[in-house]
Image 1 (cartoon, rainbow, N blue to C red):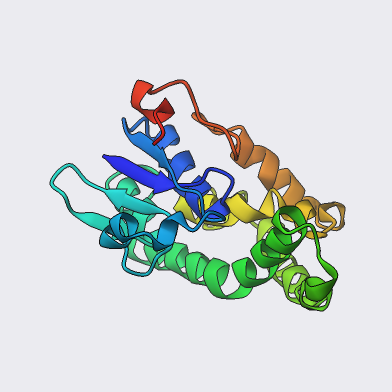
Image 2 (image 1 turned 90 degrees about the vertical axis):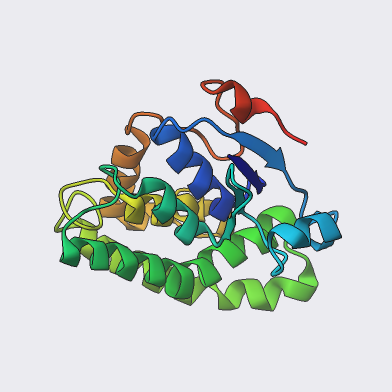
Length: 211
């Protein structure tokens, strides 16, 4: 299988982390967003929405949207629960990530880290802070009660939220105010197969090839 994405992107990192933790052989093809590569015809054939990540399976089937991809990859593994309510909780946290977390924390990070916090977007950057803090407070409340987001077991829900939370400081968020979140970040990092955002693991030969 082939993955098209950028390892510095939290949404792409979710996919990479899931692949590594499940030891799934794959090829990683780097896509440069800033150079407009997601708008090129060859990429739009993979994902007409023009966004990364995109997954290309061996039979030519394609799949997009990061959380959909990691749920597909994790189906039938310990990362995706079989209990009906637990599965719904996974989806609950993934919807939370996309609607209440990523629009604030990831966007603030992008404006600061990738755009250099230009004056023209400073107001937008500052407007993201309250929403990001609220999202972290929700996570803090849950993680004071459970080791992982869906209970005692690590799951794709944790991968979904870890991706941008562990680099939230790059968006101006002080994680020291959320000790339960910080402790959870350490637990996630300690999981077998962990790989750092922005890097490629040498474990799978195909994982190191980029085009």
